[in-house]
Length: 514
Length: 109
Image 1 (cartoon, helix red, strand yellow):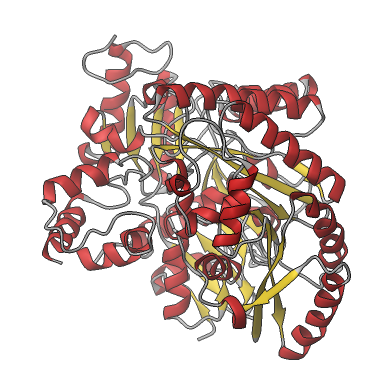
Image 2 (cartoon, chains in turn blue, yellow):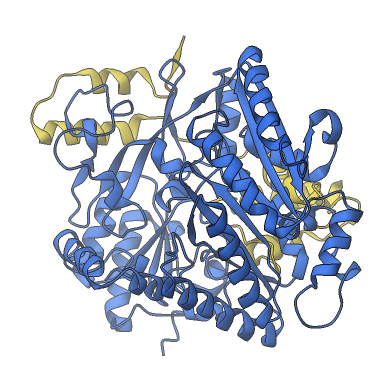
């Protein structure tokens, strides 16, 4: 064990690492290379139920230019030192800023934070990895560009590059973020700089407007992967609509999700409801308004009767469907008629708009997310159990009522076995749903840590056995999820890795790829 | 002006020069790196508070910070290490100088 470093990269001696660090310092300067425990503290804390030291980095590097990154990968190749690249480093519930394997060097690109271009007419942006949604939001407001962002719930402190590269989602009509990505600049492991799509052609002015370029489309292989370091990223922005009408539809029973999904699917596929609709369970919304301890004490998951009481006390449905209409007032009026007719048929739905619930804290933050405004209100989830433990369980479901009910019931049953609550929501794509469950536990309680780990492991095992794939996972379970997609895909990922990064210096272990 | 491009004119001119060879293209890219706008920097503690901290600490997610005369050293330690669900913030996000200003701002308010 090294005394000089808090960790070392796998298979690298202290002497070799000394040389690598000296070379990093010669490129970046002493102030941009961290190795002490104190300096590395902000890179270590995660919300996962494993010891943080299992994911402790050996060092962190703050690069600010492409040229520096090219030199860094050169040094990494020379010494076979692996790097773990982060942008804003706020992948909370998925591993935060810490590397997948202990001892990897974090390459921190937060200081590469230039907004390189925002085109009002063509409605796109080109940014560096360290740009946050808040920074871009302020820039758009300052320059009166009339464009809307789509961002995940950690909006203000997260950023478009990291979120999209991890295939995250938001809540506006542009909510499936990677669908709206257009053009990347990537530093490859050999130091070459690739611009994808039209960006490969010198003098092209269509890099951010035409995705496909010529030949195989490459952008996808740089998402959820470790084949390159994305240093510039283009994506489309939504022109601010003339009118916006957020609403919530509440249902009183868990089984009602079948009706909800059957009604939503055709409205979503046809574009009547254009945004990434959320179907949130009462326990996902409850932390904004209530404390768990007011309804349940002692071990075990919260009983259904307590959830019903809580929902009633705080004017929540057991399911809460948040959606919005966008466009001209005439378009909205017409589509509103279609929506209310569809949901009005069974008599089970309670349809509420800003007029009735505009001041409700849950509605307010949901409405903000659906128009791309900054809010961190969803972090109230972390107060539900307290203690800072959180993992996102994220299986994909068909947008079919029977399937969503089956997934919800199965998740709830497994969570209850370990004394954990179902804090879940479905984010509606056109034909799919991202079923998102925050597995919340108290990380200061060893019993809950153990239960949370075993619970998550069982969720992955049971869901994959039923053919339900996980679309995104924290760094403690990446290998397990990669395994569920079968040997052929894993081998193809490995073949690409070998071809593009023969020394395995870029984030080995990301998505189970080495 | 419809298009906003926060780069200096020199950079734009550099990029507009027709280059066919990849070596030349790489030079143009390097010029983008060195000449372009330097990116975001915090102005003062109030800006850090309003653009980061306030979303939780005035949004009923985290505890209120104002009016408690919290010692700057305590604030610094929590920001860098995190606490329970609060994530830590790295010097790449909030540099030491801005963190000192933030701590002073919070203590003062």
